[in-house]
Image: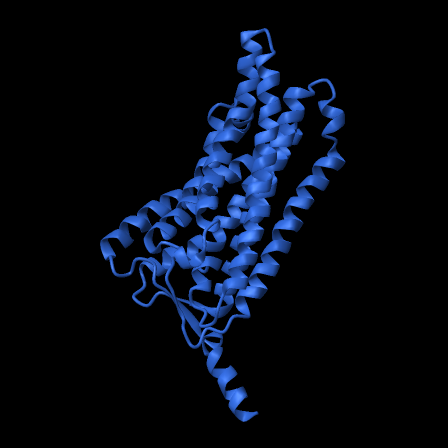
Length: 317
């Protein structure tokens, strides 16, 4: 009995202390370059997404389903980058790049929860675009306020539920005193590599969840845009086709960036997880994609331009 207790205490030794995030500590020049890039991306993410949230709240013309979901996406991206960014930026300047157990658990849970939520939310936004283009006369009736709230709630609840299951399963694994995470932050695939037992069950569950949260929503998005393409082609007016296309192109770009990197990161076995490539892909969808989202949605959007000019004019008075 005493032996088993001592063994269990040894296996979970690292749970009681802190983790070391290796990142690219062995390449200080690359570390400083990444610090500058991430600081710029994080700052632009804060400014861009905050602007979209504020505009969608204060401008009555933006009180539509499209901007309701876009506001959700912007809030999600703000939380996602803020849950990881400050700790990472500080660690770039520290000799000993540590993170407490509680903070690591928080990163593990929140990053996966928000990533899963975004998968569902992007599919919901695709359905909104389908209703706008393919059912324009019934759009207001279809995308009622109650339905929008329910669809957003399903996205958030399912994302956090999936993360709860994955995080609990991951954190139950014995680490045998290992506390060096070969990543910039605590992420499930990197964390599984610390376990000193067979992780095939965890990998199978993670892969299955990734199929559900990545491939299934992506399939719905593809089907939605199939119907949208047919509807756009049938529009006789060139101006009408251009307008319909412009309402969807921003969402398509965001979907391509997010799903492309997420599928690469999660639809593979953690045992085959490339050391440097996996890290850089994670940085891309954590910072670059979240920075580009508000730019993609606003650069071609005249309604947002008008709302922004209106706010600037009111502030200047």
